[in-house]
Length: 87
Image (cartoon, rainbow, N blue to C red; front, side, top):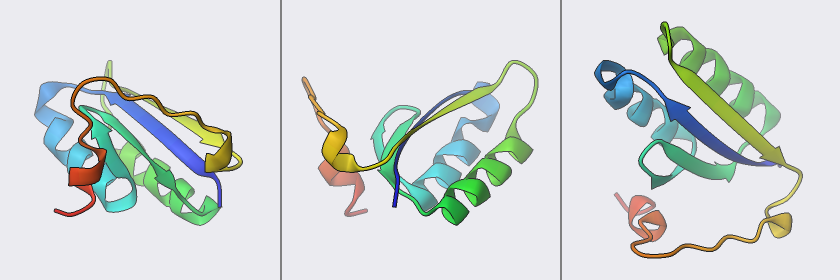
């Protein structure tokens, strides 16, 4: 199962919809930044649903890693990752 990091930059009118969509699939890390394990089918579904919400000047970037073991994650300041898993 590949590890995925996703970031988006969308118009303020669509941030709530994007947040809700991405939280269904991934763990919220920071404003507009998400991470987690997704199957290829889940990733494709998320990309399709997100693409339907995109409008002019919106953008999303997905980073795929083969395994979370290859990620060195360093968080400075407030790390909301643990909180976002228990909402």
